[in-house]
Image (cartoon, rainbow, N blue to C red; front, side, top):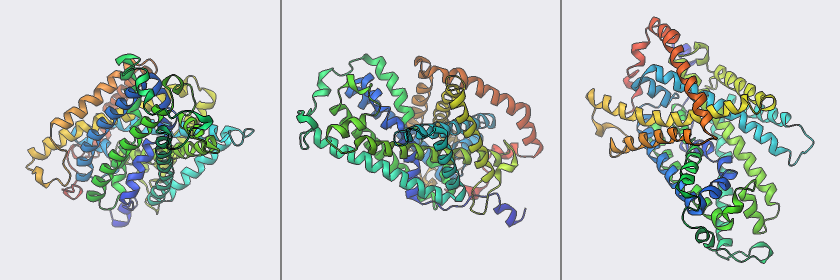
Amino acid sequence: MNLQENTAHELQRTMKARHLFMISLGGVIGSGLFLGSGYTISQAGPTGAILSYLVGGMIMFLTMLCLGELSVAMPVSGSFQTYTTKFIGPGTGFALGWLYWLGWSVTVALELLSAGQLMQRWFPDSPVWIWCAIFAIVLFSLNALSAKAFGETEFWFSSIKIFAILAFIVLGGAAMFGIIPMKGGQAAPFLSNFTAHGLLPNGFTALIITMIAVNFSFQGTELIGIAAGESEEPEKTIPKSIKQTVWRTLVFFVLAIFVLSSLIPMDKAGVVESPFVVVFDSIGIPYAADIMNFVILTALLSVANSGLYAATRMLYAMSKEKMTSPKLTKVNKQGVPINALVLTMGIALLSLLSGFFAEKTVFVWLLSVAGLGAQVGWISISASQIAFRRRFIREGGKVEDLKFRTPLYPILPLIALTLNCIVLVSLAFDSEQRLALYLGVPFVIACYVIYHLKIKKNREQDGTEEQALQLKDNKQMRI
């Protein structure tokens, strides 16, 4: 294969550290915080909600440490799917890749549908599908333009969300302690909501159930690993992005929940559409509902933008691994895997149609599987890091040569793996999430069957099966 042919199948390293940081935040800060935080407070109570976010943040932190070591050593676009294929098994990598790809494709559909519904606040007579189509065309165009264009868009999308959260924390905190007067002459609540109902008003079970939802709200940080294949100087940008993402995400979430819990009683938190709107309105911010509608709209489009990018790169990586059609490795002049992007958007739009015509059946099933993909991805990250380090040492590598190392190996990776597995198993105890296991398990089994009946044979014929179990090339190892 000559250089020109090879370039036609390779991504370009055009994204900077700030892009990586904002991409990961773009996948995390969405409707789960802006809309779902009220439910967490109403179920677990003010103190319980903060505990839930702290535990979820710890799981995120440990998982991202594992991802950091892997993605600095091997900065490839397939990220944890590629690592799973190499260090755990190609069948597992195949199942994980399709589950994660489907999950983000369906998530794109959900975010587009939600964004279209939000637009009806300002244009009540307009049909939702028109806004879905407009947003889909815009996001597709941004992703098709270049990885840098996508990263730049995500940078500004995420900046709006972060500014809104910071403004909320500052203004809400000032109202909480009486620095800013409450609307209607209400007295400043200080910490009264934290003492009114006790530590865990609905018991430990309610805390566990909310922890499941909170853990899912942190998912999206793993996009750093997927974007690693297109980042400049990954050995420098990835560790920096991971550290910034983890602590800033945790601070934003925990402080926002602290202010929300202080200003909204738990018996009212779960019945409002957006607790952020309630707080802004209570301190007299004009057009509070419209401002938050815009911020939430931005958040939804940001997650859809990140999801479209993640799913496209996952499909591209699987094609490079000979796990799907080789046509999906084709990139355009800007280095974007265009065929993978078209297929991903096509599946997202089909999922979106089910949101209009089979909302209570097919769409619910798809959403359930979507939530499972990221959690299985986190499990694979921690498991792959353990397996990678073992093989690295066994083949004569020195730990000191790794440019990014997960500390306290193997204790912290094992804790990450255990906690992520507990979250997955806990889905069985949540009636709303149980469907994910009922549908996800057969889906994964079907992927294993397809791999061993068809894909494995094709890879062996191409002479790639042995290669898939080993490191591709020492040049890919940035150690």
